[in-house]
Amino acid sequence: MYAILDIETTGGKYNEEGITEIAIYRFDGHKIVDQFSSLVNPERKIQPFVVNLTGINNEMLRNAPKFYEVAKRIIEITNGCILVAHNAQFDNRILTTEFDRLGYTFEKDTLCTVELSKKLIPDKDSYSLGKLCRSLGIPLSDRHRAQGDAKATVALFKMLLSRDTEKEIIQQMVRKDPKRQLEPKLLDIIESAPSEIGVYYMHRKDGSIIYIGKSKNIKKRLVQHFTNDNRKSKKIQLEVAEVTYEETGNELIALLKESEEIKRNKPVYNRALRKNLFTHQLTSFKDDNGYLNLKIEKADSRKKAITTFTNYQQAKSSLFRITEEHQLCQKLTGLHETKGPCFLHGVKDCYGACIGKEPSEEYNERVKGFIEKYSYANKDMLIVDRGREVDERSAILIENGAYIGFGFYSLNYQITNPEVLKSIINPMQNNRDSQHIIQTYLRKNKVLKIVNLATHTVD
Image (cartoon, rainbow, N blue to C red; front, top):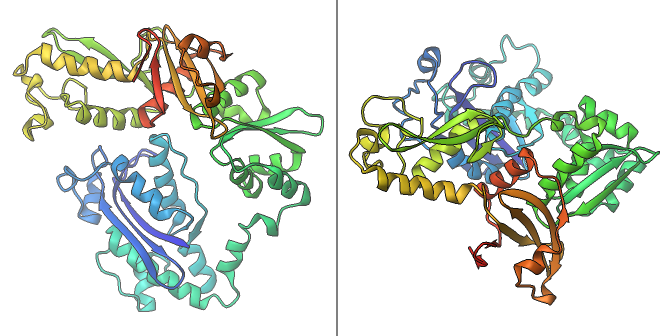
């Protein structure tokens, strides 16, 4: 199955581009079975030359969905697919970068119709999509618009499949099947791994740990490690002798355990993950008019943070969502620099705090509600979620805003007393990374329940 796509962007500095339009056709090798296209608000200005090229301007995108609002649909339509694009490296990089900003790992194998065309249709004067389609008699409407270019790429790819007498495309797909190329020791490791969520440890022959990772499906993740051909993966494939693992039952404990184990063991191939997991934080302050303001700042351990973010773009995207969900003012959340009313006030989604119309007491209550929801500073609570078995639950303990550790308990014992639950906790290190992991997870995911230890109530 293929996901044939085209992306239009704002232009600008490398890895700072934003998506303005995306079109994806799910293609089974014979026909289109699903499709998706949308303009996207990139939350940044479009370069003038791009406006002239595509015809897409900032005004057109003002009310378009932001990337986080279409991300789920993109994941669904590309599920189980190889990405196909004309200059696939570019489209895949842009898409991967956008998902990175949301803290989501988007990994797909790709096929490039530029490279395939050069092999299967040699000696063309140009392999740009427009000139190539004209020379092959492929209709191309709405050039430099995502839907038109993606539809033309479908027709081009269909032609390439028919011309692939040497099965060039199929062979590339076959090479992605690990059972056709892995050496026996790696196949044995994959065979014995569970298809469960947890943390895994890669060992050399002497037992030393060379890599630690976490995955929602350990077996599937090991297949990726052992079939990737980048430099680090090739070194791991040569050195790994055994993989041990520990199931965690849910992703939050897997994330926490992975972070602590990497800091403790310092595996040679985890260098990138030894650094702090976040770069920015959200803080609050009261302005001269008595309104509580929110502000994105670079991470600073000396300042009290409401919550933290992996990067600036993730922080900004989250703050847009927070502002809308809690009916806050874009001026007071730092998203709209203006001396007058903010953008949301103009569309009736802000009650006028930006111009002193809404009483500060009423506005501040909503800000405090957000802070109470997303910050666990000074809180005593248990985060209860799924365990490793059907009849098991996990519990993460927070005391006075500090992460204490986690443990598991059986539902057969019907433990309802928080003090008894606290006794099962395995001590772990509290640091800014663990706080970031917990806050980010709770911001994005639901857990079974949160027990407030101060009141012994369940939220």
